[in-house]
Image 1 (cartoon, rainbow, N blue to C red):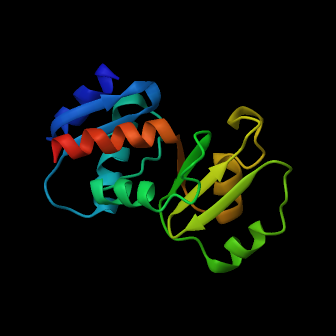
Image 2 (cartoon, rainbow, N blue to C red):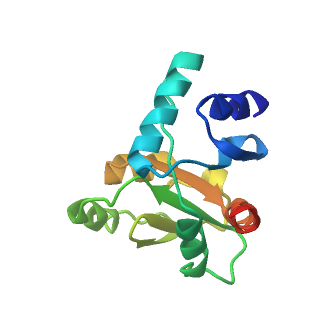
Length: 157
């Protein structure tokens, strides 16, 4: 993560903070679109490491809204799958045809709220599943990580 932080510094970002070993980076940046930021970071990672790593930019407001809109508020063992863009409605409708025992989800715009009491490691509806079915780049974080990222952006911004 220290190397990743240096890479973000090279891009001119300020107040860079990383959280755990999963690629979570909080930073200040010049005003530009999320897609432009994503491409800038994607290109720099590819140049530096030699491989493609999709990334997803979330604003502090998007993180707070995701927490506030969580339909599983009383459940600790849940996950947020953040989508890079709104999926096509027909792809969202196809998800209804899948029914995996003890796996529950709700979609709200670009966030999938996911609860799997048997553990995420055993879940069929994992990040790859949602990306394949919805044809959208996604990233998944557990409730504790999203709460911590919300705390970091609240104190930083």
